[in-house]
Structures are given as structure tokens and as C-alpha cells.
Image 1 (cartoon, helix red, strand yellow):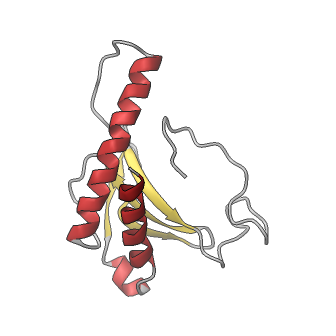
Image 2: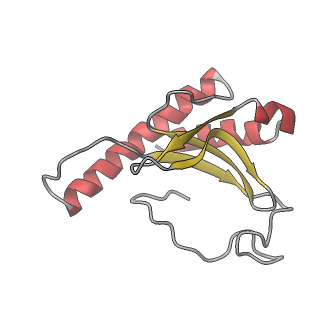
Amino acid sequence: LENDVATIETELENFFAKSTERKEKCMGTVYANERGLPMFRRGYERQQHVRECFRVPVQEEGQPWPSPRTKVCWRRVITRFQALSDALLEAVVPGHERGEDFSLAYCFRYGENDGGANGGTDNTLVGEHADVSLVVVE
């Protein structure tokens, strides 16, 4: 798992280092959550003064990828995290009915000019906050 995570980290670091024009070619359609509400764009998104993001919902229709290698590396890591999430959910709610999967995986990049806008300060890029996800990998 460590090697898989390191590989996707390298792939995404390389992607985030590209020009804005190149990254914006990986902006996809807006996906909906389990309530049918529009959420964020698939693929790349720049949240000004906050962060850059690359998102992939489990329903990949319309998903743009920086490269075929990124897609393979992403899926390799996400398959492992999905298995972990399923095991945790089964441990907490044994025998639960498995409905449609609306899982989302994403990678954030907080740049040096992004501090303070996400609850941080000049010395902290990200402020204290709570993620309501079943599994968060940092």
C-alpha cells in the first residue's frame, strides 16, 4: 500500500506542477451526491486562495484523467481504500444493505499562497476542522 500511495502522490504532484491551462483540461462535469444535489467538478478544480483539488467519484462517467498512468495508479490505491472502508462499515453495521455507492476520493494540494483562506493562518495552511468521511487518509 505504501508504494501505491507514493506512486499516486508522485503522479498528482507532477500534475499539480503543470500550467493552469494544462490542469484546466482535466476539469470534468459536476457530479451529484446521494440526494441528487450537485457537488463539485470531477477532476481538477482550483479553489482560489484555498487549494487545488483532483476529485474522482466512484461513478467515473465523464472523469478526466491527467494521464493513463494516473488513472491506473489512482484505481490501484482506491481499490485498497474501498476494501478498508467496506470492512470498517461491516464492523460498525454488520449485515447492512449495500446500496448504490456514492463514494468520492480526492487529493488536495495546499500551496504557499493558500494559507488562511481555509481557516488557517499565515503559518498554517489548513485550519482545524472535521471531515465527515468514513475514511480519511492524510
